[in-house]
Image 1 (cartoon, one colour):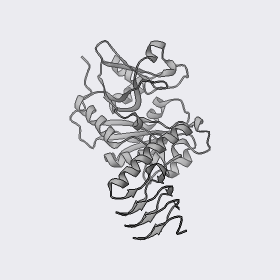
Image 2 (cartoon, helix red, strand yellow):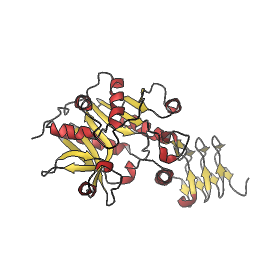
Image 3 (cartoon, helix red, strand yellow):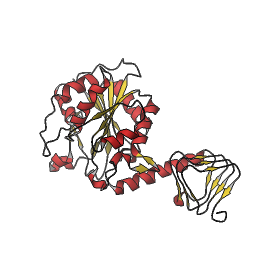
Amino acid sequence: MSKSAGVGTMKKNDIAAIILAAGKGTRMKSEVPKVLHQVCGRPMLGYVLDLLKGLRIQRSAVVLGHKADQVRRFLPAGTRSVLQKKLIGTADAVKEAVPALGGFSGITVILYGDTPLLKKETIARLIHRHRQTRAAATILTAKLESPAGYGRILRDHLGAIYGIQEEKDADDFQKDIKEINTGFICFDTRLLKTMLRRVRPNNRKKEYYLTDVIGLLYRGGYSVENVLLADFNEALGVNSRVDLAQAQEVMQKRILQRYMQDGITIIDPASTCIDYGVKIGRDSTIYPFTVIENDVTIGKQCCVGPFAHIKRGARIKDRMSVGLDTV
């Protein structure tokens, strides 16, 4: 029988988060740090920071690395950040961040600065499962028909998770496994600290993998649980311009749906682009081929478009019309 981590009686606010945002993002082919690339007019990292607010996680640390100064300038005042001097893996990044949490010994959830589509409800479910089972670690997993590129979840003959194998180190049998690691994991912090000291760079790239902690916990007799993610779009990590376009498409759809649910008419969502942070009054209508940048305020009962480009910072009063025939 697996050992419990003993976290079931902790207070609900006894949660910390570590956001990994140190990577170079070489496939982006850009001078801009990957986590600062924009989705719907906002840096990706901003959406992840919103998760902390939504979940009321007050204790956190952001791990910086590549072009750390640029990323640090984006962080809200008071945000703890640590520098990973050498980018030698996720376990090393988390190990650098743990001291910034002080003497914290509750639940630590691992997040990523390049995953703007993750919903707070999903992480809340992950944390709830972790508390409920009193596990040492709880992994957000998904099942994919084409799992190429992702670490595979390894289970024993009883179905218990005993490890995660990164694809670059997987054999042919392991590559056929459909259940994958999304990267989002809740840990018992005391056990995490202990196991991080035992992680060794025993893989092909000589990196320190956070996923190796799962195997160490299993071999130590501790339980590892999971929550299965239904919509894999949430876990999309942006590593290329193609991924960025995919994230933009999903986020734009969410934004437009939210406006329509709030009483705004959008004639043709497929040809409409509205950034994050735009304010639109009820009973306004947005016509096709309209672009609205962030920090725009549009009043009630307005008509915008068609073929309108409303630039950042614009203010449109109630019952105004702005479009091709009004420019």
